[in-house]
Amino acid sequence: MASQARGLQNFISDLRNAKSKDEEIKRVEKELANIRKKFTAGGPSKLNADGSNPTLSSYQRKKYVWKLVYIHVLGYEVDFGHSEVLALVRSSKYAEKQVGYVALSLLLRGGDPAIGAVLSTIKQDLAPLSPSTKKKDEATADVAQALALCSIANISGLELIQSLHVEVQHILLSKSSTPCVRKKAALCLLRLVRTSPNLVAGREFAPHVAQLLQDRHLGVLTSTMSLLNGLAGQHTAEYETLIPYVVHILGMLVLKKACAREYLYYRTPSPWLQIKLLKFLQLYPHAISPDGANGSANGGGAAKPYVSQLTS
Image 1: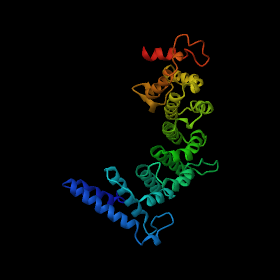
Image 2: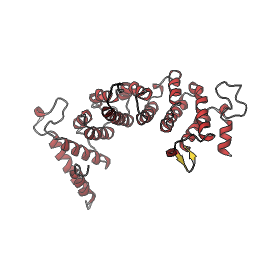
Image 3: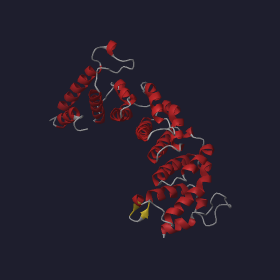
Image 4: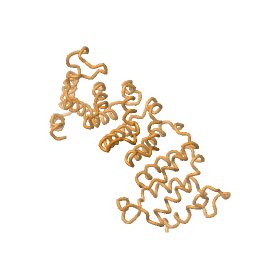
C-alpha cells in the first residue's frame, strides 16, 4: 500500500504543509483539474461505453480515486469520476474492488443516477456461494460480499433498497454464509429497515430471526439482536414469539457463563449482547414480571431469574 500510494501521500503532505486556507484550496483545485484531465484524456471517443478511461493503469485509477475520496473527506465537492469508481467496483481484483466500494460509499448517494449502472455488479458480488466453490474462491467471495454489504448500508437510497433488500436477506439466512458475512448482513438489513420501516413483514420474518438466534457464534447473535431490536421497536407484537429464544440466550450467558474467551470482558460474558437482550425484553414487560401478564404463553416472567441475578 505504501509503495502504491506514494502519489496520494505526496498530495496529502502538500495539503498539510499549506500555510493558509487559500493555498490549500489552490492545491486542491489544481489536483482536481489534473484528475479530470487524466480521466478524459483522448476525448469522449476514446472512453469506454461506461465512461471510464481504458488508458489508465490500475495504479493510476486507484491513485486518482483515492485522491478524490480524500478531497471529499476534507469537505470539498467532488462531482466527477463516478465512471472510474464503478470501473473499480466491477474489477475482479480485490485491491481495485476495495477502493471502488470505499469510494462508492462516500462519493455516491442513493438517488445518484450512476447507482443504477452498478446494481448488477453489486448483485453479482452478493450472490450466495455454491457448494462446489473452492476455498480460494470462497475467501474472495466473502470479501466481495462484505464490501458490497458495507456499501449498501452506507449509501442506502430507495432504489438501492428496493433492488437489493431481498439479496441481503438471502445472504443473512444462507447456511453457506460465513459468520463475518452474516454479521454484516444483519447490520446492513437493520440500516435498510430504518430507512424503509415496512421493508420486512414481521410475522413472516420472525421464524428466520428465530433460526439466527440459535447460532452459536456470539458475534452473529450480537448483530442479530441489533437487527431484532430495530425490528421489534417498530412492530413489537410481531416479534413477541421470540421471547423464549432471547431468554434462553440470556440464561446461557448469565447462569452457565457459556461464552468464548474472546467475548469475555472482565470475566463478564459478552456484556454487549446481554444489554441488547435486556433491551429487547424491556419491550415486553410481562417477560420480566414475577407472574407474567395474563398468563402469556410467550415467556411470561421467564426472564425474571436472570434479570434478578444481573442486578444483584
